[in-house]
Image 1 (cartoon, one colour):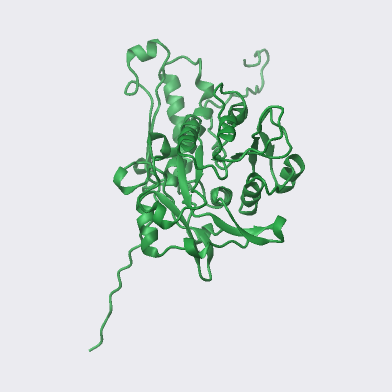
Image 2 (spheres, rainbow, N blue to C red):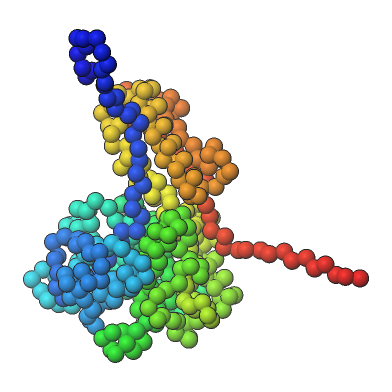
Length: 391
């Protein structure tokens, strides 16, 4: 309220800004699930470094892949991870991926414990279950992630080769697979528990770290692949799992992302397709960065419009929403996240009579329609060379 005006002079009134802002949410907070010899089991525990993981969960343990994958995550650029420790009540039994006891503890039928601890935290963007490759479990994890606007990084089986994958990834490319991506093959890396002898590890921890590093340096709209997406830690690929350019092309068209070693360049992720990315499926969510950009926009707008709840559902509110969301999308456009040379070519925001019926308005529904033109990775760079022949 303004100060009561009672005398001649200058009065000051602070007027609140009617325009709300939308802050972009983090994009690479990663949840890891697996067995560990110690640590909390009643919650998803946040760790921000490898040392913190060692203190809380015991570090590396030859009986489980969890510690190794978390270390690979931090070694490759990861910054924040939630750890879900999987164990049986009142038992010290080691639980191993792809075994029924592990999978039942991972996604309990009563939806309490296991990965459902993640419902108690504010946000996670990526999910890794190192070494889990069971088809039914992967399908369930894809559904779990899609319902929470998160993205699943899927490991191929340890024994997978070009020959076993050339016909496709199997029955894990359903509708929910838009929020997941498969990586091949397992990675050779030093094992500190075996005097740094080389051993194969699942790719998910490395890849999650690359996602985090790319998001930080370039943005979630940049494909986490290419020479920039080189893996750290003295890694390589086993010789019998090394593939040619032609074989890479076959797997790429099936929606399988390959990890390859290049002389003088190191080992890098060389694909960025979702599990709905096979050419034959024709999905609009073919590419990992396109899908993750959409999830980023959805989550940011969802959280950034909370203020609108219980406001009068009329034109003044709709105008504020259009301005708030429009400012957010304009920032993305200026940051290079969207296609187009002008904002109107890159996105649109609609909220009003064109997005709602009178019945919607009467029952308190406010529909916001946002469209955007995402940046897509240049998978195929074609160079035309013209020779000028003297004569």
